Length: 82
Image (tube, rainbow, N blue to C red; front, top):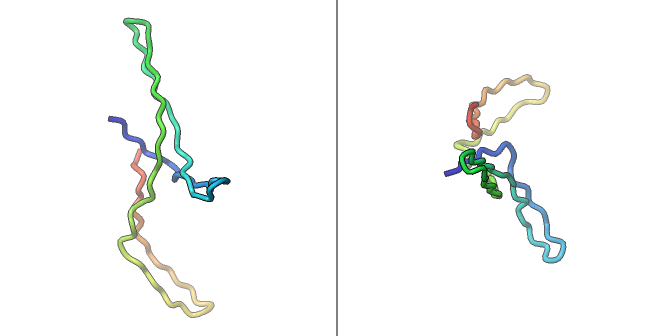
């Protein structure tokens, strides 16, 4: 199994002929050299990255003009830690 951890979202472009939105696929390759036989295998990969899940909550604030306000937000990173 191959697990891909994208650093960017999949972009969408409009098809000039149909006007449909299409994904611009992420592309990559895996190369496996075989020392015993001297051969190798190259696998070309393509796929898309989906957006992060929906937010857990929505925060709405009413703040007076020219008033300083600090709001602490808890952010869940959807990218894996390295």
